[in-house]
Image (spheres, rainbow, N blue to C red):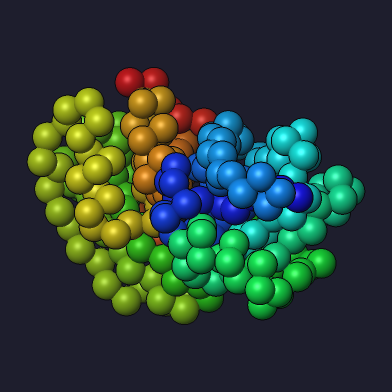
Length: 236
């Protein structure tokens, strides 16, 4: 019996990831062998179909059940087709939710808990903190070379706070960790190099790329579940 848990890191002590298809890691617990295995999710950078491909990956690993925060309609259909049960957990570490599963206290779900776009960003009414790479009043086309980052707190579908911080300087691998200290969930930019994308995913922060327009337009699109995730407009 194998249980896969969406994870923000590589060890059983890390918090679970609320996302399914965009979760950067899955930690698989084998009940029969009492052993743990961490696997990376290669679907996190997919523009679409992340939930389906992730379900197929877990099926190939012989997984029998999944524990996650939320799952979309396409993903749950793919999991059910593969004979994989889905259980919901709102919070806790990977090892904690596995213990909850073993005690039989987790809720088994059979329908989607979020819209099909949830893995890109939350539907309206959710809570999140986003960072936008900015130049003046517009989204910057270069994540690492922008002059400022606009931090936006969204609570229950409403913008509660907006803060502008300066870009402290672009060095390989530095900025994702710098912004992670601001407790962001999403980073929005026109373009971003592959190394930065990988680091953000490892930190449990979802990049939303290929974005253009004014800051206010982007915030409004995000809140109303209309912001589209696309290809990076730069490769450095």
